[in-house]
Image 1 (tube, helix red, strand yellow):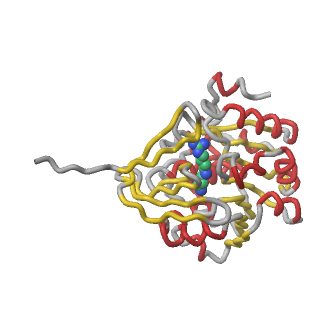
Image 2 (image 1 turned 135 degrees about the horizontal axis):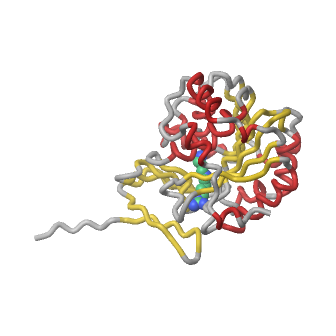
Image 3 (image 1 turned 90 degrees about the horizontal axis):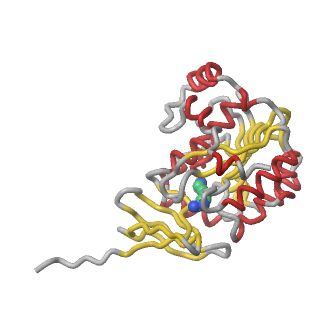
Length: 286
Ligand code: AG3
């Protein structure tokens, strides 16, 4: 007789016309905070998977692509980033990548949901990999939009490590938020944002690019393909009044080398190439 095994699948229905499914090989955590429903399960290929309200936020298997590209591209393009602000990023993966730069003196991470941080330490320890214990990290539990409106600190790099623009993350996609974030940048500072998968979320990127274009001398997006953000490459918004985008390859190589970081995804070549946009994405720019 054949052994019958029923696989449970986690459906991500972010779009009405397209969905992905990951097998839930072992459910580790499932609970609701006042902000959202948090689940962590184990998948044979992706390792531990974190979903918020059913949307895949990160997986142990492919998180390095996302976190490295949102952290190292602006930091190495900047060249002397000492103060970094992370908005969101409760799982600690972004803080981990940023803190790998010895030149970074202080990281302020503003996460709205204390529940995410607590459970991530417990259920996804490989994500933060000790980042929450680093004395250079200042963890603030607050609404990121309110934080940028109130603080008068300035940062060399601001990374918006958000969810999609649904629920608590929605305010992080507004013109008001981008404008306030810009005011918090030191001279030559760079703002980068999570902007979804343009093939499926074109409007989200169009709106951000329009806002960034109105605010910054240099506004664009760059790309990386992350398997569980399905549907094509993901876009990251980029805004700065400085000239960091034109840092040449030799200089990026020198900086990457000097950092001493052993990257898994990032290379100076990928960094430069990430800004090459296919026509359908170029046309979303104002
Ligand atoms: N937040 C990324 C949200 C991904 C949205 N998914 C999508 N558009 N398919 C990542 C948090 C990791 N620190």
